[in-house]
Length: 103
Image 1: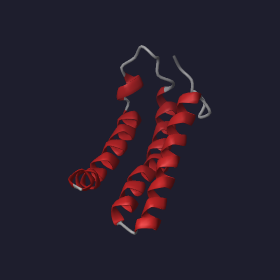
Image 2: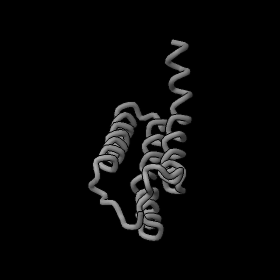
Image 3: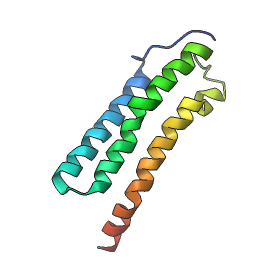
Image 4: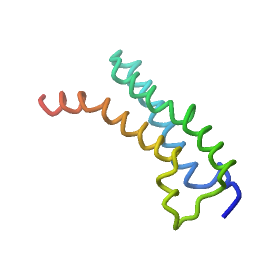
């Protein structure tokens, strides 16, 4: 299938809306607690709309829309970059979760 799906598709709106909410909450937590952990988490997630979204746009402009039955729906490089950014934010969050667990 060739062609570009719109940015305004429900999956894109949900992904980037959730990311922007997480970024906003990370910066709000940083402002309240002044813990650089929250800033780093917000910055890791901010890479998604600043780096991953344009990469995804270029990928789809070159290769078109993925077919739902294709392995590329999950494993295309921009989608892998999205997952890695989210995983990195969770890795950054682990020390906070461990500290809370011990309390």
